[in-house]
Image (cartoon, rainbow, N blue to C red; front, side, top):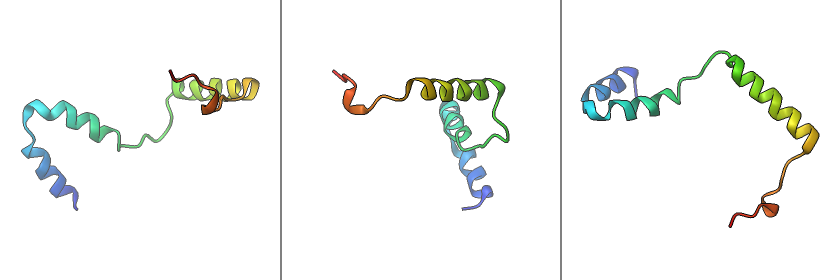
Length: 63
């Protein structure tokens, strides 16, 4: 499927559905570099895992 076909399909979308389609499509657009807050979150997560480990699914009380 070409980009031109996708562009044509987008023109067929009802205006009421534009926001929903935008949210779906934007997930497929890759970013070149992570944002500063994303880098900070990754650093904090890595530190937490290194210090505290992880929790297995079996030990979680899902009820």
